[in-house]
Image (cartoon, rainbow, N blue to C red; front, top):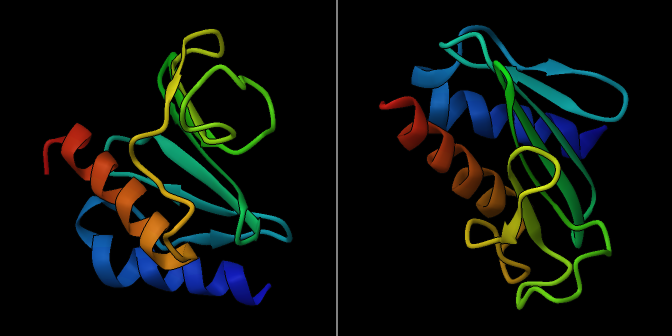
Length: 116
């Protein structure tokens, strides 16, 4: 639960201009609702495993570390860009980053995509 609180605080402190409401903390994730009514579910159970699932109308962008797509140079990090089947290298997060740094990188990406 402590990790989820840190994620929620990070979002509030650094990205309040793209949040429509306060972060919602569930037992296993933090949900962020953005100003365009899209949302992101962030799961970060341990430092080396995470999932950022952004649902935007009919489009998904999910950055995760599920151990598949070993052909990618960023394996196991990858992005489902636009839909489940379009898999690309993860150039947004990094294993060397701590949790807060990765959250900031992903939300910075969202901020750019939202045009703010």
